[in-house]
Length: 543
Image 1 (tube, rainbow, N blue to C red):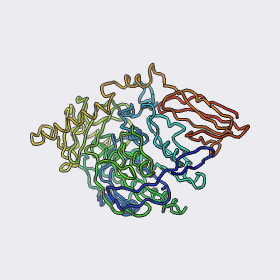
Image 2: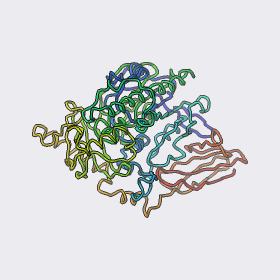
Image 3: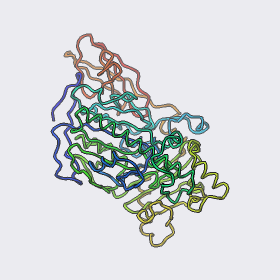
């Protein structure tokens, strides 16, 4: 490896990735470090032409699939954004560090009277994975959604705003950039209800858990139309990279942050809420048109991105790289958990293997349906509630509303893809049920340490006495040669600094990775951060 000087910082230049050994062992390492572009949409299941949906009008994503790898079994831990994004930025299961409640920082009136806002706090040393990319010389940008269950530390990104862009990087630096597209979000089903439709509601093929009527069909048609618009937006980001002459050295990753936006999709642990489309395009065309069916989870994505950049993922990550230099073993199981969702208290965990899903309802007296107030803005959600209350909802759609639900659920997903038939009492599956019970208990014991606590008790564990943990102010130590070392007494803290009030620009903070050389008269300012903790006071040092 060689070293590259960046404004006085010495960092290791990341080795390039040799690609996926599992998919294409002949893949050759590129001569340059790859740029990595992540395009993230919200709230869609695999309603795309390339995933076999004949109604979807997604020409750009269909072409993207032909040029890259299409994954058919990528799962989020929970079918809702904030806990999912907590996993996506840390490589951890959100249950492991108090990030599974939707959402920890919500101060809207609908959650008044419940637990006051707080932030999830992982073990010391856990960092946003982008810090490892920054330390390796990448310029990291996020535009614009974070929603991590904690305030993003200043060390996480070079830029994170509505104007953040890889084009703002210093010349010659490789970039890692995320762009978030919101047009497919659940709220857009009602906010974009009057936009032109790309298909007739009469063409929609409905799942068995939705009633067949004009209201339902209209919302489905709006959803497909929003996906079509997202498809257009997604291509515009790729075109920007191509127009800059950088596409031949850029890995492009596209995915959704959780499953579909409609009732019994978003917020659920079933396929409809947890299974998401995920695709990767390599610049040299290797693996083009490949379909990969290995079991994957969101926690695997940060580890994989680091692996693609030639960076060894930290050992604390729960994720397993599935591409790149450090590709690991394949999973036998994926897992899910959901707790409070907005104003509704819930507790549910699950495990899925290549064929079955086992669900454990820790609050069996409840129904599957939760009256999340924001969702009642959706016409078909209101319609389903009204039909149920009048006793007019069809038998299959009604199951979601009925209580008490069973303590356990078991589904043969291969033969029952909508998970409508609970087989928990079927003796033919007794051996598989027992196996998956044991596996979920093992996972809960290891990765769900707050399962037996109320959210108030969880908050007290994370913020003792209701006070957010703090980070000690950094200390500056210098030698006679002008070399300055910055340290922090808080274990696992990260440090950001500026020289004469700027990093690469006036608002930019540099990530501290090694001693900095200052010129006489220069002023260094530094802060220390740690996920979920209050940022330290500013330390100022004039050389």
